[in-house]
Length: 85
Length: 268
Image (cartoon, rainbow over all chains, first blue to last red; front, side, top):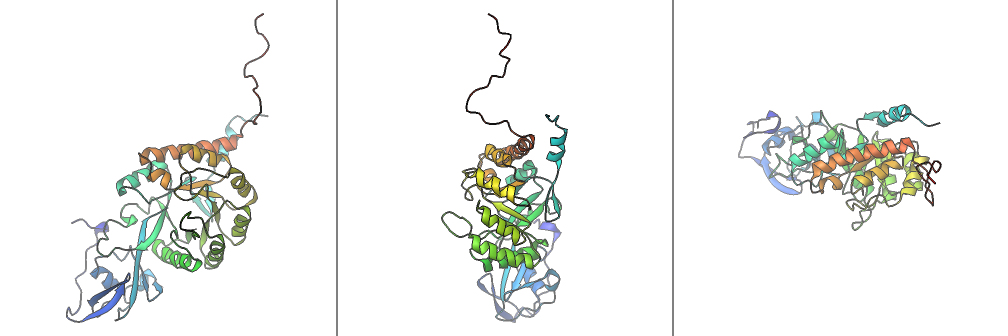
């Protein structure tokens, strides 16, 4: 399978048993506990370089995505550029 | 005295500069509404534009790989101008603008605040409010607005880098409905005037550029043509022809005919 920009998915998900419920783009999802936002994006099969994250109403700058903890109840908006006029 | 082409050629070659950035073309094209991404990329190439507009939307968590525009357009080759399309309030537009800045790492923004779902005409009051806040926040704002001279002047006063009056409503293809007001906006403003929305075909692009404006932004006229790649090329030529015609200076309009051939030397 061809992936854009040669990006490969990371396999560093911690303890698969423990999960937390977060809201992503208006949808509730259970994701592994202990992730940071960068690994959350990889967990969702997204390229962190092409996605902008708003966490609980605050935009995360690109260099802040790694190391930003994902906690139960967090609300994420994940956006990117699409075709438009 | 008549020119010999050199002075006009020099002015025609002059680059469009907005907010300190030099643009490679006076035609800016949108990337929406194409039947497929391959056609969109080929149409962008055929248009000669080096700047294309993009929108900010949620990623589709179930199908993400091929829908993002960055998978198809090389950001080394095109300057991506994000828009706030679909926003109906100043606050919403400001939120999208900040997300766009984070996504594109550019302070340039096509600000668009819509006031009416039926006509998609701009909410100029909300646009002005958002423009003031975004300019204060360091954005270089290209503001979509009506062909209203007073509002165009206010947007310029608010610090917008360019003002973008419409030719006619978004996606209507009705062409330039008010050349007088667009011309007056161009005469009165110091910042570049880019006509955004409403152009339907190459003659509309040409006529719009003949008003003396600095450029045109369009999407639907190319994307919805039967052959978008050919229409993109036609638009490129239309913009260039209109620019040249404006610089060349058209002949006066007369009520009656004036012969082109000598009236003397006719046979008895």
